[in-house]
Image (tube, rainbow, N blue to C red; front, side, top):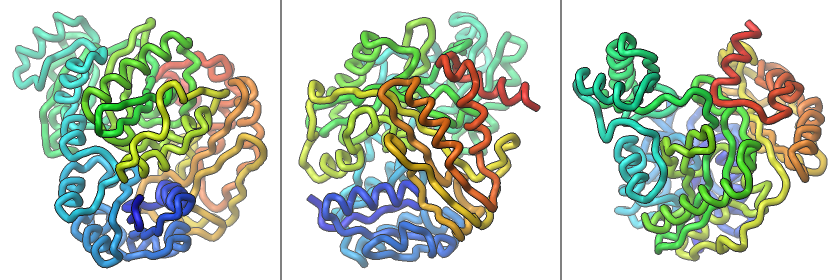
Length: 447
């Protein structure tokens, strides 16, 4: 097991990883920017190192500073959390060159799955169902028209190196295609430095289903069930739940088995999430995230397994602690992402939290690094906390969530709490009857 882990992140995920390390008896080092000097994870860590000014490029994305912090403190491993450098193959390679363990997959696996076209090819080779579309990047408009006509409109243009909804455009007819291609290429080039795009069939009313997987790097793989992440705004997840209200036990076992076998065959090490669009009983691969997900707590709630413990165990060479037959699913869990944003316009709302009170009771978990008097800086992601609720079934979970949201108090800034209080009382949400377009339509109707 590791002696000392450096946590290369901030906010609630840094605190989440820190807690796991303490439970395992591992010393912790956190890095921070000058803007985060008073952050909770900095206060609680065994050691802390300031790595630069507020802008991420000068601090949390500064690989050389983080490696230097490892060498200064004697950290023998790095947990990247999510975001920032968590899916940076170069970072994983550099750590390996310095004999520091990256708690995640190899740089090669990050590269494969970070390129959307190569990821799709790999998924297809591993037996994972994919969305009909181009086999690779589309460079000629004439070729794009031929492919779109073959798979049928509407189609979606996606950035090969993309994510977060950037470089994605829908064309509902051939007349729309040329403009969609130009716009997607322009956005992709500006956002990722790579204007390569590809084409896929655009599904009308799909759900977003993702499967949590783990590999030991030596040919073993397991899955921890699926999460439903269909409630999204601009391709950003807002509300996640497990298990999905849309799947039955047979579908769950089938797609989970497909993913676990693929991970084993790939020789993958650590946590990963294979994401699908699901429509009319069919799964279509869209991407794989080679890191811990923001929404991992709902999986922990229904399995009783600490996924960060598992990450650390695998990275240290201890292998997986469970076999597939050991993993059981209990009840239902929902996570709401509490952001420092206006609940209608989603404009960021940095500032000082004057009062902060979290709900409690059976089945309630709050992952947050903020506190009363904490000043939310304007430089980073607006996520300030996650409310995770677990119940014996979905009905109990929803009732408990309603109660927890009523208890949650954040004063001094605007947050998305009012949005969730509205959603929990909506009939479609109560019935689990929604798709990836539902939330944006709901918000548009409320304007």
